[in-house]
Length: 178
Image (cartoon, rainbow, N blue to C red; front, side, top):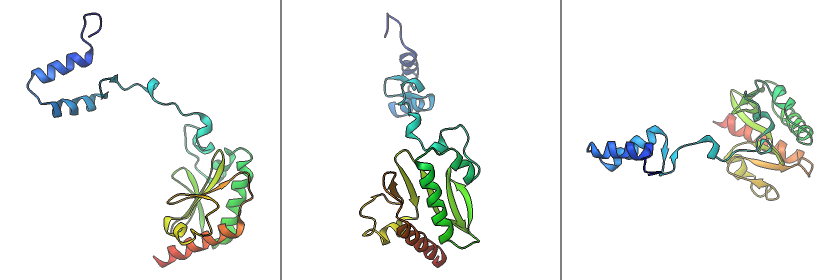
């Protein structure tokens, strides 16, 4: 209660609980109305705001890029030269029939299905071959930041061309085996 007046949440709570609905049902009503645990309505102002540098350059705009070239236009240096080099390495490793596409707001190459994704970020460029490929090459990837489905290549080091080609070839072989 503020200044002797009930808040909207308190009025709603007393209405629903007074009407004989249980606490579980009341919680469901609160979630539907956008209430959070006793702090009032959710507010965009209270949500953590993301700084522009935290996002991939291609995701900063209100619309997603429609082509790989459009994605690359939105990438600033030094990431731009690195991502262009990665694109060329992947292109030369895959068969000519492989097509460039945008998938999940990232550039990708597909041959019947998406084989690999690649993307530029603030401090690294990433290659997304697949979890199985990363597991297969885990010993060779020890010097890089790796998660389940991605390998991160830092901006301050040259791209390991031979390793990228191996990863892409392994992903191609894996895809053909399915």
